[in-house]
Length: 323
Image (cartoon, rainbow, N blue to C red):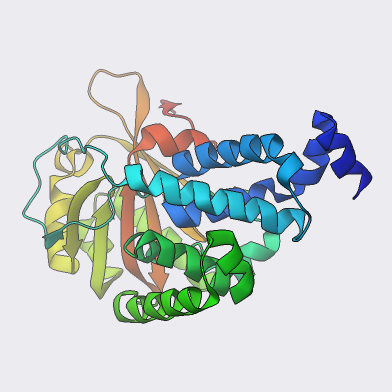
């Protein structure tokens, strides 16, 4: 038994912090992958740490502290998923054209790149991309957990079985089904490297077209099968024509209100914090976050998020002064 573990078991909170703090960020990301929500991931991380503190006496050291924490976090996420998918959704605040389809994942939230370790930004981009996170949320919860633990985090089959209280045979079967489902439903893109000339140029052109309210310019940057989604609302639009029809209805475009855009990053890709100034108001107010999923030198998906929850996590203000 290490000195830190012995001290923590004796009630030393500082020693407990030494044991667990190195894993806080990766555990939060793990919870986000399983839940698709930063808000829920933060809550479950705190529940995990409380459960670990209370359960120190039962930790038998048959696994590492890291594996033990992942077991607690994973099972807390599985419990949380039962409630997360029943959230009520408010109606859209403006009239929109008929969507290509409705459904999707209504509880999805963006993940700030600033919370990713530097190596994760490059080595594990696909495992934080919105397309992958969205696909995970459409799997049965235990399949999601198995796939993330095995394929993303590289835990062994027996370790995962121990974490989930099941057999290695069940883990293998769940992993196979999850992989098959993802292969069928998860369209893979070919994003440019972060900060590359291709990504910078795509970002520049999109920002210029959007702030100029140039719908044709925005549409010209899309792939033919691009999707526009807007969690928590279920409306989804596919293709340049459908997306253009929606953009024309956006109040900032329709009413030609002055706009500001701040560039940031989320889920491994470029994102835009959008602000609009309405008549008679002295400042620009946040209207949403647009996360781009690049496919080569074009845009394969646009995902819009309401500002209230995600802007503070990204370190963005909800209002900007008139310049």
